[in-house]
Length: 487
Image (cartoon, rainbow, N blue to C red; front, side):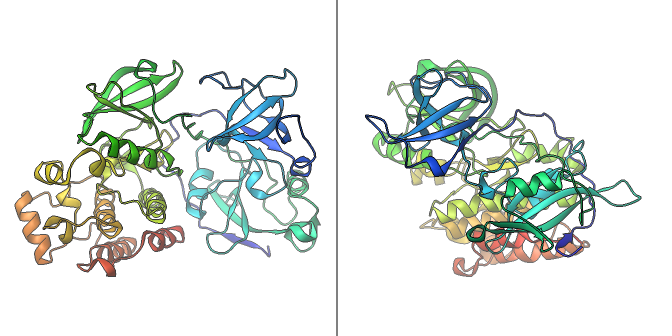
């Protein structure tokens, strides 16, 4: 079959818990970008293909699926200023609702910014028809891949088949096989939706999106009156967590904390945290810091399945196969590699600070809060200090925290995941943990008789090197798990 590369069929055990609405898009024709000018702003003619959006924030533009708009150069980091062609109304639309219609793979409905293992996880969801597909980047290199849900002949078992997708834009050539070339990706997808040719099945439709990226609030400081707390979800190291509604419409999670003594430094750091944006990082949507004598509200996107530690010990988590556990490890490494790239130290990475979404995917949470909300002296003197996840250089003065200490913590999180939420060093007191780790003791292999367990443990031991400089980077770890083959 020429260009085909297949994975062995794997049966998914995690059922999706909810079907969310499709992602919202705006299609922009770049050929028109420089030709439209108004009396006040240079504008870009756009074709809009979206789900409906009502006004949530002051200055929002209301639109429906199929509407047309123009987009102005006047914009915020997370928002675009647009004019509705039919009504003439102007206002802001969320930038993560927009797609440019330039023929690039990234701007098609089928494109997902994910790796091979995550593509397979999405395509193994129960109920997806044969021919459901994803377009993604190659895990290594600059090319693209078409991943298609097919079935093992005669068995009825699903599998995912991967095809190299050739995109020669300078030549207007797009193809899967040399024998048949197309002048656009749309033409290629349309053809293979009607003809299987050298593939085992015709293309059906793009894999549905079960997650809509949260819309960052236009200002990171939110009036307290706009946040309505609902039921309490739990209590963390720095305060209570509530389900809440913001602006009367947006469902969020709110962490209620005491405002730190250095309020100005907190707000400066909060601005940095607000700008961090990645699919494997819980989005910090805003803060309520007024009045000064009231508790601080940290407003985050809501992930309904809660902390990973509890999820793994629950009915769904305790039945996850090893492949799904490795996918969770992969997703955490993806988020941490982003923080590493941004030179941002988490300081408190553990399974209880990883949150689980409706579909079982995970995101890293509470990054930087340890440094943000507590002075070093207070933090280290309290029971919140994550000593069971900390390397020797963090346990002893001067208590060094770095990306390398986060890597150590990641190794401990791997142990938590592979033991379905077991507490690290469960048979030791805190003082014994400090003594043993400093002397060179390391957690045992959770899966000593499993070939994958042996391979995974080798990487855990690398994370637990005594010399921080000899520990792997998150970028390397993410690449390793992207290409993992389950034995």
